[in-house]
Length: 182
Image 1 (cartoon, helix red, strand yellow):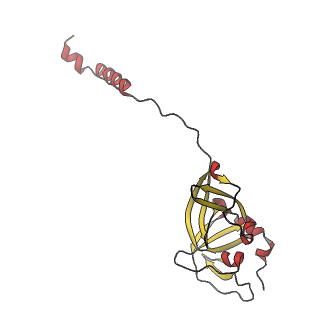
Image 2: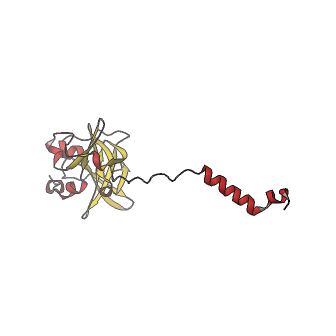
Image 3: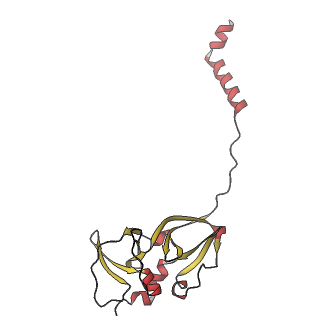
């Protein structure tokens, strides 16, 4: 067989290509165990950094136009028409500490819907999705605040950051939160 025909034979070329690939191939990456992760919506209320479980927040809104509701407690901001649905808007800081959220362009409304309790909570700022590893969970809470502690589940600590997990469901189940009339 002629040497030039041997070099252009497709089968020989494929065999040579396979030999080179095997020689230069790297091994597969090690399969590492996936670490379990907790995901929530981070938000700020005063000086506290809090996170609500992702499944407990159904929507995040900019502050909507409101109609005042007479005869309600000061922390009831009013009622908003959001895409044809009436949404009561509550001031979370006002409810927990008796002083309203200072409204800024960063203020947002976290919407919850739990057992028919459809409500919006005004917070100072939404800080986006927060991902924490299970080993970052701590039972230590970042603040000793009787107004908020009953709604905190646990916390997460990563370096200097300490986040408390705020339960929207516990808030919606609280009898005092449901008593909005004066």
